[in-house]
Image 1 (cartoon, rainbow over the protein chains, first blue to last red):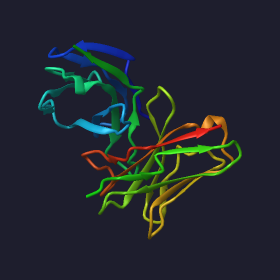
Image 2: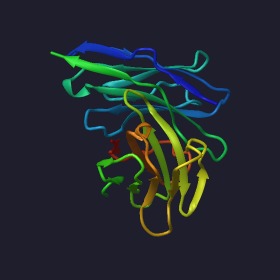
Image 3: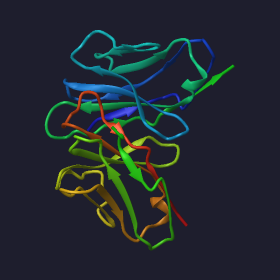
Image 4: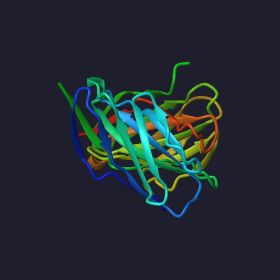
Length: 116
Length: 115
């Protein structure tokens, strides 16, 4: 079974600054996907960024980038130039690529507050 | 494309009643997943369905909970004889294929409150 751990329940960052959210996972799989989802107060789950485990290059989407360390099973999210609209819960998630199972395993989340 | 539609958005039930949560996947998506989010927790997988078939129900409680995804119509998550501990947000997600590499598209959830 896979587990995903987010050790930072809450974080705060000032507008325009950079913040990094941590995520570690445990799996015996070698082929998998990793995701970061954002959940604003509206409750909608929004995909922020994804990483394929076989790719060494870290994924980047505009102000969002990841630091994927496969050997260390670490998948942190960096948000640059933070904006007030980035205030939300952020969930790290794992999906294995083999077999018929297609479920996402989520961490417990990090609540990010962006302040003026 | 309307996205994943869940209704109702809020549902209040008294203990012992039945709750029926509906999910219409995105057009062209034949894979549906249900997740439950307890307060201040992450989403926990419940069940994965493909049209008319349950593929993986390893996260479903053994009693009182059932799910279906008929050939026609939305997917339904049914909770019989609800108890206070069933109070949570229930999310549905859909994808066009299994192990969708771009993740799923989630609905906005149904918040169930049991009083």
